Length: 498
Image (cartoon, rainbow, N blue to C red; front, side, top):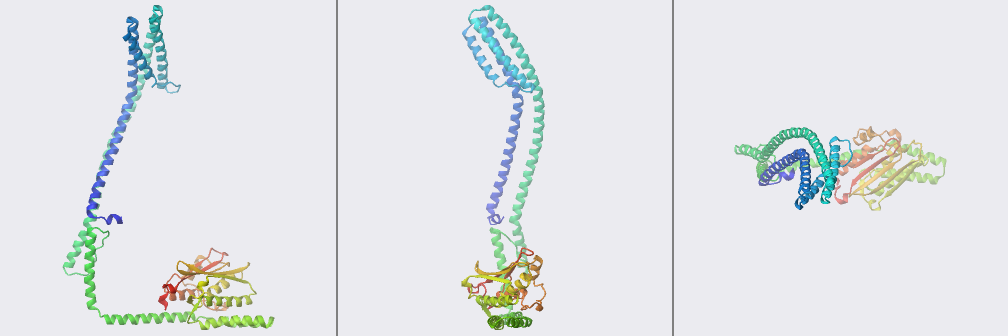
């Protein structure tokens, strides 16, 4: 359709004319071929009667040639006999020679057999004549004459049967011709209507935009510049003129607006608006990043004290160091960016603390492209997702729980996957998380207080895009996968947050 609209008016008119001619040509060709086919069927109806009449005439020629030769015994009559016999044999080949249940075909077979016997008797009569055996050729002549009469009777009977059958076929074909005549008339009428509709649509396609353009031009000439622009598609001559007219109207409007507006005031207002939006985003980021649960600190210190009572100071020292690193990172990075390596170290510290508390039930492994370790990302985006996998995914399950973290390049962006083999998430729950409809994090569950909703909000603000996180789960007890899609700020996609 778009190609048609881009064609010139001359080409459209020529194409419509040729298309109409082709339709008429193919319709006439169709009618001619069908009429021709029906006429051939009519000819075939009487062809069988004609062939029987021809067979009867050739048989009579053979009989007359034999009679003349027996009377005169001349070379000419002998030649005429042999020629008529040859022609009769050829005609016999078209008759049925097999046994079947059809009455007319069986009559053809009998006529063929009797005619062959008849020719055998005539040959004997001719040989007896040439041998001057008067008594023998007289007997054979009489026998041949009887067979001749008998064959003619069979041919006459078969001819009558065929004529009756052919009459029924002829009437059927005449009825079919009558129906086809009406059908042809309907086709011609439909073709004519289709051509009229085609011409009407083409004329409307050409003149419609011109009519709208003329009406709009009259309004502009009357001093109205608030008219609607003429909508046009394609690239023909009318479309070019219409687009030029629309551009002229837009230019006039723009010039009028520019003379009425104060450019300095507009620039100041825009600058003030941008500053307000920047301060608002900064405030939102600080607010979202400040949600750290003090209960988590207290519970963790209690766990460290219990461990110190149970075993030596070396493990306690390692536990406290990891705990200190964890909270030092939270305090230090709350308003800053972090590298992906720092985020991974925070995850390691967190999981060490959790394994001390839960006796090493959490199995964690990671595969990270080394080139990504120095990439800058918002702080506290991986640990809350891992914490969510621990608290709501693998805690309390009856099988060995594991968490796998991978980070790699994918189509010019960073793809970070955090996957567990826990209880999984329903589609409804995933939808609620993505839409921010989940309740606030329960701080009594020893959580940091930073949930998935918090991570999603900060990533969307930081990268100024909606598609930053995806949650996948195949159903109950099939695990959960959280995927982060982070634009590479060094490649230009994340520069708006700076």
